[in-house]
Length: 124
Ligand SMILES: [Cu+2]
Image 1 (cartoon, protein in one colour):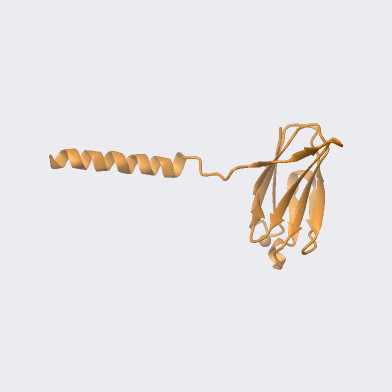
Image 2 (spheres, rainbow, N blue to C red):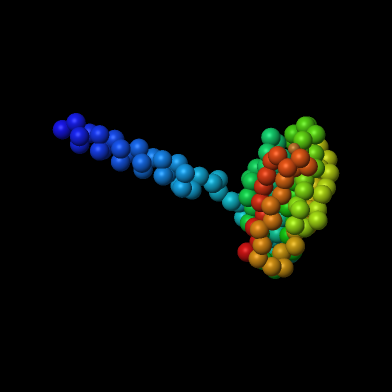
């Protein structure tokens, strides 16, 4: 009887561990709104990190990601897209749009100036 209990506990433990390591815990990505003027825009709030962390843009439609920095710390005052050669200052409490190239499928990682906080823009 106790053997059965041990086996059940072991199976439960293994399932939990594999869920923990291999399960999908990512927060949902947010898609940009496409306006009638054929332009897409999505807002990212900068406040102790990036919210949402991942945004999805439609390929082939001009796009801007508008960063709004609520966080006063200097850590998040710059946003860097290494693949796009973008390194810009984000004024506090203001909308700061950044134009993203949507001509091809891509995943652009971005980060704060010190590479501590990370986000991603997906074009597809
Ligand atoms: Cu930083």
